[in-house]
Length: 339
Image (cartoon, rainbow, N blue to C red; front, side, top):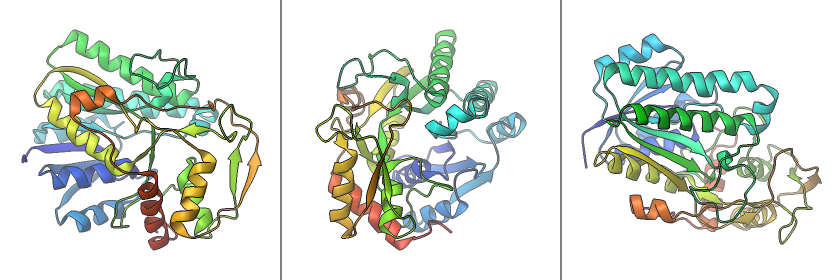
């Protein structure tokens, strides 16, 4: 337990809001900065409802350097958790400069503001997309990094920026957390994944089909070298992921330097396995059609999480059944999301 305050960029988003819940429950005070480009302020109202604790919210963009410096001069944050960023792989290929501006330049502005104001404790929201095509499975943190889309490359650029920064100033404490595939929702059903447009990820698409918002699921390819031909991914419950951030923050209070860690379950499930598990959890049919593969999709990807277990004493706890049940509870209670 601590009364340290934490700045959470992008804290109104899917992973950010769940992390705010876990931070507040652990005794931290939370300030969120978010431009609401792919999130809703109502998520933070729900966070306050779940925890019974207040969140300070600032609607702003991390590209606003002057605002960041002013905010950090007024507050002695114990740590910064950096979620703010664009995250759609397909969109990044269509609009790469938008992604480099937001994800790379936004991160640069944040780090400059932190350096200017003496804030040197950061958790960065990275991604398993930095690995690119797997050369060996499970993916360890030492696997080569060779992202195959602009989104993944923006994440790797920021990782490299952080490593260069720490080489120049060893007083920094940084955790680079490489997520696999977040799914699920808070067990209350009050917060969950609510994409503004057509979902880019599997589970919100499946749940929107089940609730009647969409006609059918498009399965992108059934000819991969996997047991049923559909892509296999490491799905991790968002609450497990959020708790990993709290553990990482606790670790950074005890050390300087850089931790680079996978956050996943170490187990892969195919698209069809997830669809069938969701049908069972929801009691609803999820009709589907098979479409062509998407550019850049790999057949199989799952994590080796040994290092995060050793460094953070953290392991994912939720089962696939819980992931699907919690997703359905959120979707059925919020048929059109936060709106």
